[in-house]
Length: 507
Image 1: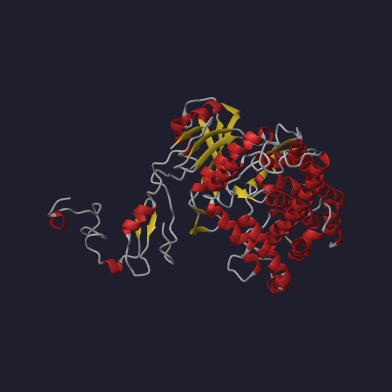
Image 2: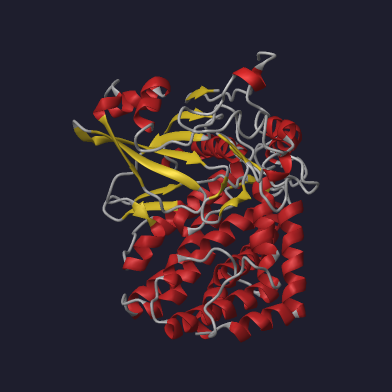
């Protein structure tokens, strides 16, 4: 920069009558923020603009390259709290429907092959815009509408809240890695992967064409899926068994725990919105008011409930049983009634955690669908069908898990070793105790997930789409009663059949 810059070099655009604005002339006390392509630099608590800290925060990890085989791979501050920054890789560019086709043409060659073209001009792009956390695009070949892919890009903040709630970009890397692991364990129920970019937080994967739709939307519409519950039971069994001590050596299992512990920001988010905030007064909480005001107060005063919730939180943070999806709700499943296809998607919360958190999350959303049916027009027969699917899912999960446990080709891990448990009777006794334990975990975590979807930050469309507030509150109160019963008494419930009967009796 020239020594006489202040005297001879105007930095302002032509037509603006100022000389060297902001940095060189304006006193710092008058600067409320510095706008950059990576966000706004706000003054810290001492009133200083710590540009060096901002640059450091936005350049961490930019040289890291993720290995993505067989998929192709390439390598903001808050005014309230300067530490609450948006951590964004230097190369990161938030994609739009205009920029994405060219990005794919330049970088995602396998995806372009799937799309049947090498030219960006041949592509059309639509942003779906219904997610809480990410951007999701459908990219289509203009010349052949059957050639499509899905592009998912992580944003550096919680989309449904805004930049005031920063969120790690690393979650895209963990989601891709989890998808790859699940694809290996259960290829039939996981979409194909075509491309991943860590700096851009961007995954390109198989487009699940109609009649595949999000399971939650299908349940609201009253669609019956002939194989959904069976398929999801198999998915949970295969992915959980294959990534646990039932299949892994001690060394491999501990290495997995070490690796997945790095997805700590997503774990912390779950700890906050599932295990903590619903049980106290928190600004993020919301519920149908005034109808459920007293219900919320009762939750905050229920000592037995809060102790059980705290014990469940301890399990969540300390039990490293398997690589869990950790967000397996009915919005993370796509199904087609026509051909019986089922796919599990969106495992960005994945980590080594308690198996029952996945099985519990899934049945929680089926129970939420069940209690919502009184606010929809699908009839009593559909309500009964939803309950049946909970039992079908559970039976499928247990049967497949025990099948893999009984097979020496798949039961290769360090847990329940065949050298110690030599007889079939001993093994069956261990299996019976294990099923009892996973049932208890499943129901208690299901209760936690149900309760948070009614009085926490993120609700479910099943209930929120019920327009009449009184009807909605009645359905939600039914859900709360089921949730509280499961959380407090899961250990005394002896079967999923009994759990379903309890849910029906609380209507």
